[in-house]
Image (cartoon, rainbow over the protein chains, first blue to last red):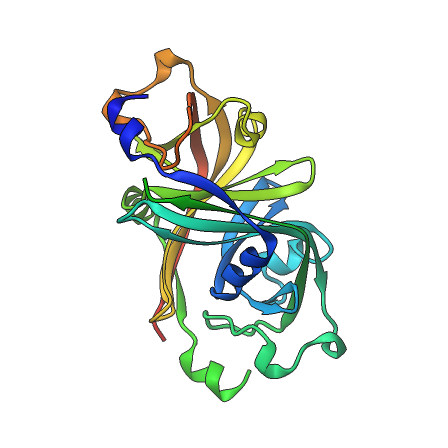
Length: 138
Length: 138
């Protein structure tokens, strides 16, 4: 450790579960980590929070449609400030289920993907574990 | 698809490898996806670019130190604008190697972790594949 690091490194603090959910609800984009035949993969995804689960929409025949349903996954949601070198990150881990049209929430509660494309497959992550950490300014 | 989505969804474009590296060099924080005994996991990490590889520093005895060395991983780097619903994302995939002190680059080229803590284990991801996508404003 050099002098620069000693003085300017930020402080990590755990975030409790209630605040994790509050933070996740404040964002619309996360990154979903899953496994394919080449190992771990991670891509951005738009989501909506439905009770204590995350909803996604993906295109049928996409990589996500091939690998997410029934699989374990982790979704990371964060807000990072380069200027102050601070921020927070929440990770939700669990198994992804594919939703039938009967199981969908009301239209206004469904996720709105940002990119173009027919994203007609609805998926839900109900996390078994949600953890978060905040990096406070040094 | 409803009228709202038809008019406001953004356009996805592939980013070539040279521009992927340029974008990765413009950022200091990514999210590393790896596997632990509960499946896929993903957390933010500060990195430095060394030639065409990413360098990280982690704390010995940390979860990352337990799971990354020798393992396959993916690192996602992005910049997402909520106002315009646009942005870019680059993913680098490969195997993580642990570096001996002899293999470290010059001090000024090493990563500077933002959080406090003795992050004395140096790791390198040399990607086999680097891919990127840009989401253009609708």
